[in-house]
Structure formats: structure tokens, C-alpha cells
Length: 271
Image 1 (cartoon, helix red, strand yellow):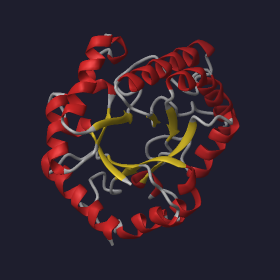
Image 2 (spheres, helix red, strand yellow):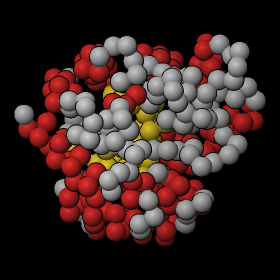
Image 3 (cartoon, helix red, strand yellow):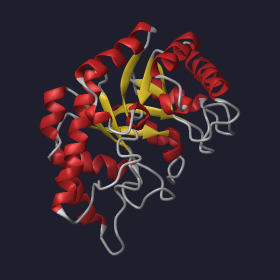
Image 4 (cartoon, one colour):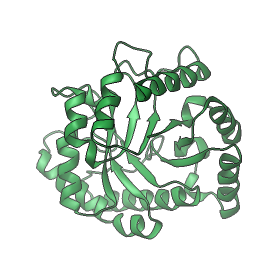
């Protein structure tokens, strides 16, 4: 396992500075939120993309991938009944697959709770059909750019669609493509009725990526959850991907969060 951290934690700091700070702490990777790269990240020029990648790699880290793919955008929706909206969403995801590749990344984490929730009255089966239609349009870009799309289950407090690992796996299986994978997030798994360790044992072999966070929306070690059994379960299933710190509560401060989260994860991995 290798450790990464999501860059939006550092808010408005330049990416080069974030990379240097995280590398100094011991992180090997950065997971980027597109909105931190400007209002129109897909419009970044070839030279701008090259410079961003050089800035990150010069610090001794690498871009793992992108997440918050549709955050701070309008007009996109995974399960919209309107074909034009689904097509526009697919184009956006395809553009981000290209951006991810240009930055040296290998995966896209598809959370997007607001842009996937089902409208009132729509059955889950119809949402699954519409989501599969949207994502099927992205498959050629994933293949072309050699980027994996990781479906992220999220709790019912955030969305009413894809709330469990089982549902995300079902959607991935309906697409039947090796570039569509499962993403596991600790905070989200905590909302399921099955214990997190059991979910990891059941689905960990299918996971391409993993987010480490406490159910209280802070980093590992900043809440009541014991991460030791979680890392034991990850080792048990042979998970060798990235473990990326993603937090939503930035207190007490980004540097403390990054340093102490990594310290906690290293201790768990070593035990």
C-alpha cells in the first residue's frame, strides 16, 4: 500500500507547494480535485498540464488521479432522464480522463452525490439503467487514456443512489469493462449495516482505490474509529493500491491533519 492525500485540503495553495509539503511529510501521491486547477480544468493547455505534472513530480510525489469530478459545476447529472444531459456528463468525464492521463494519474473517483441522486419517484432500477448508459459513453475514453473509473458508494445522508458496495459492484458488473472498478471510502462504509472490516473482506479484492477518513469527516486518528482492524483487513485481502486521505473537516489545520493521519496509517500498516 502507498499513501496519498487529497489536495483540496490545502485550499488555495499552489500545487507545487502542496506537493513539496506532502512529500516532506512522507506522502508518495496526490489526489487532485479538478476545481483546484481553475474554473475550467479541462481547458488547460498542453504546456500547462505538463508544468503541473512536472511541479508535482519534482517534489518527489506523483498524481494518483482525480476526484470531486463534477464538484462546483452545473449542467451535469449521471442519472438524468434527458439523454442530452447524460451525454454532456459523459463528455465531461471523458475530458477528465484525458486530463488525468496528462497529469500522470491513473484513476478517476466518481462520487458526485448531487449529480447522481435520483429524482422523486424514479426507481433504483431506472437509475441503474441511466447511469450505465452515461458511463458506457465514457468507456472509449477510459480505454484510450488508460484510466480507471472508480465507482464510489456514498451514504444515504449524501445521496439516494449507489449507497452500498453491493450496488456499486452491480453497476460496474452491468458495464462489464475492466476499466470500471470499485472505490471504497471508510466514511461511506460506516453508513452500511455491515461492519467496515467485513465489507473490506468481501469487496476489497475488487477495489481499485481506497479513501481513509473517519465517519466524523476528519482524518484517520482524529475520531473514535480504530483503523487498525481496517488495515489488517486490507492486508488480508491483498490490497496493494493507494490509500488516500480525504477529509471534509479541516480543523485544526491542514498540516496537522496531513501529518497525524499519515502517522496513524503507518502505525496501523506496521502492526
